Picture 1: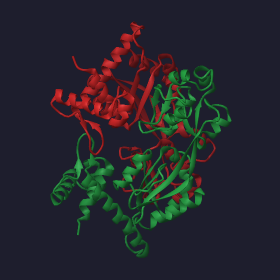
Picture 2: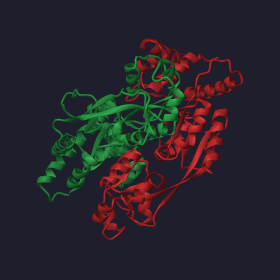
Picture 3: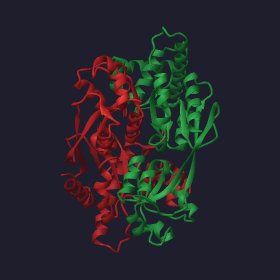
Picture 4: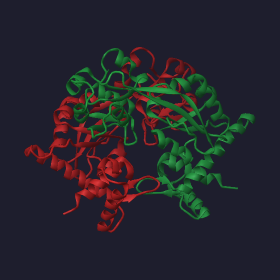
Length: 288
Length: 288
């Protein structure tokens, strides 16, 4: 049998991003936490953590964390049938795209969080990265645009979000005086969420443009909207998030009629316990 | 003289988080990009990139990137005095706290972005992590709560943000029927931005509570507010962000009278060129 005290220490170090903070949480000294990680590494014959440049689990450490999370979920089901067992609320680590988090997510999960006493550990990741974290066992479920489930997991379609290329009217007058055209795309500063964000490229391709374009990088959905609303750039924003700004005329499309539909799929491990199953049923119900 | 083609390749690989995407940006094959990184490593006698578990610069690679960014900023000043030089818009990498990004930041920098043709590369980091990235040379400036400048840098006070412990009235009725007390803090699910976020702990300490408490983790300012507004938890939110929700009564304080004032300091390298200087002057002016 594995020593789960050691796995708990590993999970806490990774979650707290540090030995000292993990010690605070576990009520242990920093050196006692180090000792537990070392014991795990001795037992495994290889490192479970990389210390530089960032504290991160090794692939072996990651596999241990996956296992630890699965055991936790199973224990939760056990506690459901044996209510006298010490009942600690589970924290479910979920990778979610930023735009869902700032639009429909909170309303969709509010009831189930209360009913199940569920605590969320949300991780914001774009598309493929979220799925990679699911594969690595770093998260228990993932919300992203990719339909294909990874091996051992399932995916459920939840709907789609519509993205429009928006800016302030003043910005459009300045940078798109002749509508969407090559000259405008070459000079108008765009806003892109991050290096993995392909929406701006897809929009430009839809308009027949494939060249370079200037862009700001802003890895925050709400920050993105604020930059656009301040006239700093234009970018692809979900209608669900900016409906009011569009209705009031503060934001308008730089290319009316153009939009991108991004589907949303919920990915989760097949054998991840009742909590994930209930959450999945709940999301399917509220989203359709 | 260093071969800046190689440094440019390194910066692009790190910015794009991948060799293939960097190749697309540079108009090179993936293997040509790899070759440039290898040349750099041969020249340096040590690796500049770590490939696993995430692509990241080594400390030596980071020092090269710092230097590259400084040279870019100096080149920008040069172009200011020699306008016939090819004028490429600079992208300024800035570490910023999420709450500033979703409140006052966009309005504050809109004018200077337009006037200087400045492109932003915003990185969201809490407090000390942002300052660490400045020290590592990963960002050119950093907005955080720490007053002390790091060696070689300066810091300028910009003001402060006020955080209130907020939840929906229904939530408060359910979890804080007797106001802020130990029993409530032990059972009421809080929302915490991430492992480095100390606001919730500071608030609880202010109330004289030092024990454990259940919490959700949500590393998005806007997502944080959405979770609270959906009744999922309570947490420390900046007045600047939730003024309207407080005025309309959708969010109220779980401990009226309690708030935390978090100061904001702008950190930047002393010798980082005119653009940072102008941005600093601009921020000092608009914020005071």
